[in-house]
Length: 246
Image (cartoon, rainbow, N blue to C red; front, side, top):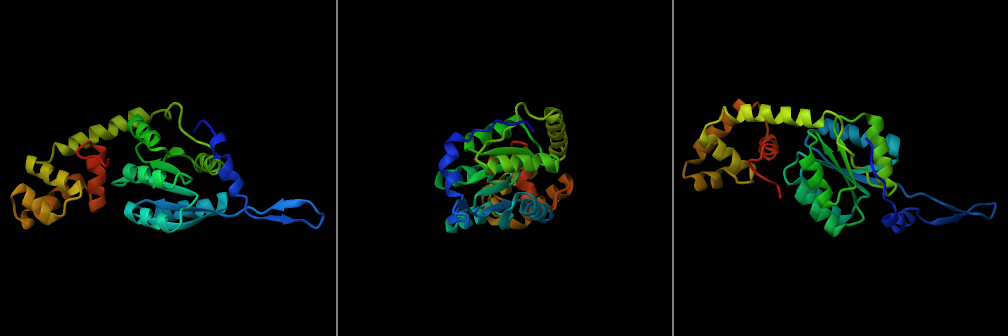
């Protein structure tokens, strides 16, 4: 991934990260690097765990939190903000959480990981103030290079987007449109309400149907779309424009 590196605005933070000064036996002062920390937000536990191991082994960065909930991330950062946050772009509320985090913890570096990179998500990420944007399909060496740059105070953004991104994204949307065509009007209404955060009872009340009917529609939606978790419903709805997380 090609990127642009801007470090001037981060000089005070880099100096603060050096830790306490020690004096070597030779009389020359030395600096002890404080270990940097990271928090990871991803709803795929195996991927999140592997990212944490990669950060520790190759970037000397200790992962202090792995979660599938953006709300848990925000609560954790209030207790102690990390140096780095890796955020899955497909998480419901991801961009809203990034904006809130950077507003209240401007020193935190955020790298957005995107399974389906797009110009729209890149633009939204930049608007939120991320320090990096990386495709989940990136090679480990490419990912680590981006992490080292970001932890060093730089910014890594693709210029332009990786070759083939538009084609892959377009294909994903075509596939999504085909899946949406399988849903009835009522199922789309239920999907939209649930993806926006409504509970079953609230969705039933808003649509004027019973909770059992909502559950039945939800089961049909899951089967037709090939999904298995509520978070997957939300990601599908966000990706295909049914709801927004902002």
